[in-house]
Image (cartoon, rainbow over all chains, first blue to last red; front, side, top):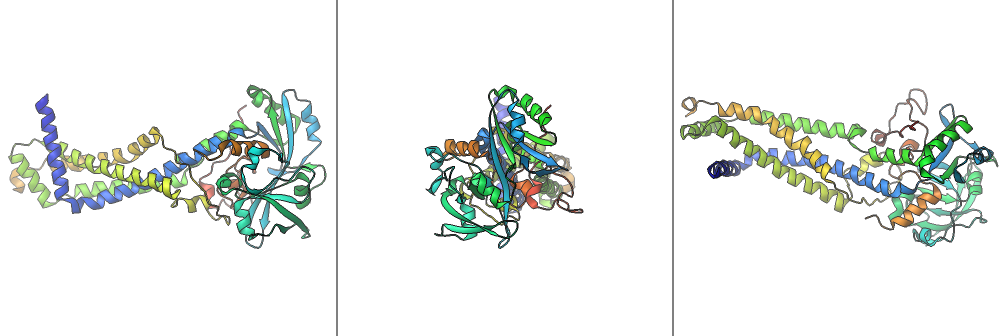
Length: 393
Length: 65
């Protein structure tokens, strides 16, 4: 038993020594493999980090959000629908909200407008403001702005600014508070104002809103009450907190297609390269195998040698790729993938990614990278090991 | 650890925020939870989905009933 282990260690030792001697030849494979693992791991770590951040932040979304659809598009809801929902037993609170986008024609940015009445005296909420306060319920034309909105409107120290209504008349607004940069993931593009101001900005009718935010007393009943709401308001779209959380669990994941497909294609290309490179073994390699066989090595020993060489290369590349990916997420906030997520957005808020790593991600990356590489080198290793010594030495 | 998490959760609950402000280029990438259901040619006839971030963001899960 002891001698068998010693034999494996000797083969491993020889393999590592052989790799070191041919380091120039192996360096290219090692670096490309590390780069492929780095890209795959960065994508996976970023997905996991964003998913986890969303899970924490969106834990408190309203139990049910209700919208009205017409011909597949969202249209305003009437405030009279609240009376219909009042009849449903189990609903503990209904809040009205106007939610929409303001397109800034001067620079092509989209701002998210929320017309709501946030409690002005909540110290917890005030801790999210870098300066100022929230507007009180009886104040008009007062807004709280997100960090990216301030920068995009180039407000600097100005507190008064104007936005255009649909008829191009102007509504004058006063900035009374600014959200912290650390809350950018939620508030970067936000313009928070009173319900009446939002209605005025979008020129909506007095009895119109866009959403109803509904709280349910017993969480077990949420799906039942959602069904009742859908029946009470024909054509409505009823979204539960569970649906939103489920969406963000899968968002940016490997199932999201495009990005993963590109990265896996690069991995497949690398595996083909590794296969091709291992297949084309040189005259020196053949002579080495011939000499080893003349010294008494068996075919299986040569295959083990090649396997250990591949394993050592793959393990080192895996370690380097994962480490670089972690540094990329931890210290550079996934800077290489930021442009993909931001796409053609005009607003480019600073985002801090909260790094999150889990064992299953490491296993998944290992299975997607190291195992295909080892598999791709088996046949070339076998072909190299069946060389007849007398034909090459 | 997310900085000032309780305050952010309170803001989400108060304003009913449903999505992360990552991609503001289109309504279905800024608010995948609240925008129209994703549909082909949703903006005008012949307009296929063309925003890069749209490729990464799944439409909202359907209601279980």
